[in-house]
Length: 358
Image 1 (spheres, rainbow, N blue to C red):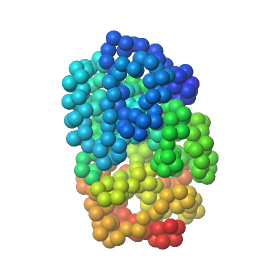
Image 2 (cartoon, one colour; image 1 turned 135 degrees about the vertical axis):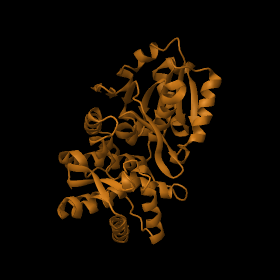
Image 3 (cartoon, rainbow, N blue to C red; image 1 turned 90 degrees about the horizontal axis):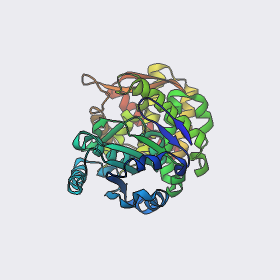
Image 4 (cartoon, rainbow, N blue to C red; image 1 turned 180 degrees about the vertical axis):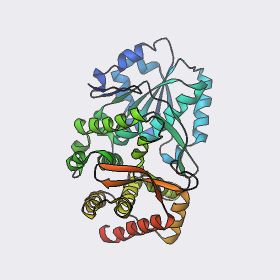
């Protein structure tokens, strides 16, 4: 096992059977354990986990509906009522087995119920392993607005085992790949050169790369847990991307990674004029993103609606939209104001790329 330790949370990467999870579960032998899953991880991952850790045979299983559109308060209320009916208390343990929606929602549920229960994340998607389960953020959506309700409360431990990636459809690798690229864009040009050609499952399940991505996030979060400064860098691509994701949520939903990829391309495009990203490096970013992700042709109506959604972004101040931009690949800056005209120009550029590459 590789252990990434920090004052906020510890992450164990490797064969989960060799991890400290068994010892942790033994410490809860006289208490209740709740395992939160969605239909996918119930069918594909739960049996493996219970076989590996028989202590979980007596646990209560909570099944969440699949999908970002179900990361909402109505679902949480149903689960909290179940917690209450089962008689769970603050000394019991919640174990979240799933991708980003499960870890986001499960952490939110545990951190608020009776003012906080212990919880553990076992992410099963690439996105969950390198991003959603790391850093102590838990949250749900409010209408079309991403992660508007949430807490900052770290799990007792995170266990990352690439074996679970064998359960994923190909699209899920690319969902997480966007966050992998984000780390490279904001902090590590060498990582970008290492991963820019990734295309196969064995690429995405590379433990060395997974550890590098986790370490980048852990190092940033350790210095800025409550996102007052440097942690904002982790939102590169998300100012535009979250608005795109929210806009399509109620019509034809697109994945978080797909939306963030479009957002990163738009924000990189703006970086050329605003903070000096070279055209050469912008083209490198554009090439890797258009190779992997379908680009969308936005109508004028789409663009107006997406910009309107951006006014609810958590990084905004005094009614102004702020974003992370790139000086270069591996060098980034936060707190850059974006004007509506600039955002519109960037989204029109995305539309133009859809004509070229799709």
